Length: 115
Image 1 (cartoon, rainbow, N blue to C red):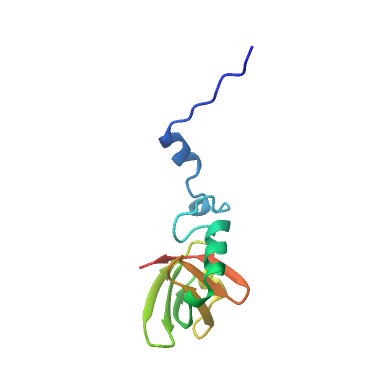
Image 2: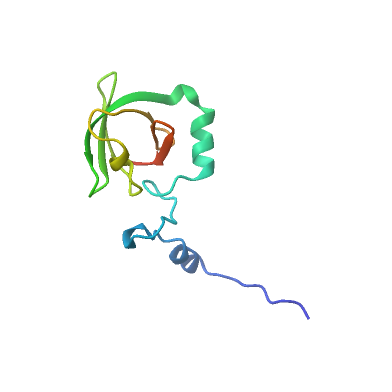
């Protein structure tokens, strides 16, 4: 007797991977602004010429909103639910990878939603 296959519908899979950070648990979503996916981090690492240096202009730890300004003057509004705003108060030097949505604060990297 063989074990029956467990077929899950796409909606069931999406529900199970829904972000838990809104309830105070660890984030289980890899959507922009949530948990950093290993592949996302590796892609950003593999394209070092696309990182830009920036300085934090605004950081709101309650909402997760962060605004950074690159050295050429471009402003980027970001959102992260995993604490990037706590790690980067105003004036903190950071690096931003716009293509893959990664914000580096020292050695820590965060998945960010670009606004």
